Length: 141
Image (cartoon, rainbow, N blue to C red; front, side, top):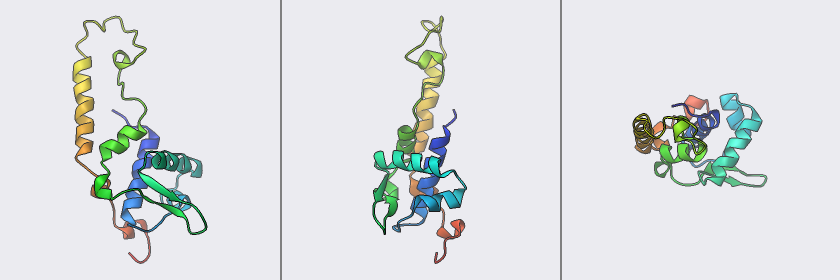
């Protein structure tokens, strides 16, 4: 199973947000820390705020912060929100045209593997993957 790039960026943003604690951070800080394109970070931050993982505070002293405690944000929920397609093969898609779907024995093990993948992620929160601020080169950590 492969996660899309926006999910990867989302997890990195959440690591950063958790690691700096209650302080507000900006999109530009994320761009600088990870060397990512600003447009990508903006797109992912938008998805994270819509999914209520981050809160955006507008204004001169604005920025971003976690929407709730890091212990309450499961990685599985984050991945489910960011991923658009968990249909691993043709027979799992609504547009399935595979000729052996009616008798195929592949669907069940793949569905079980997908469930196990997400169940494993559900055991971890963003707090579990946070780094120390010093690991980002943040002063005063």
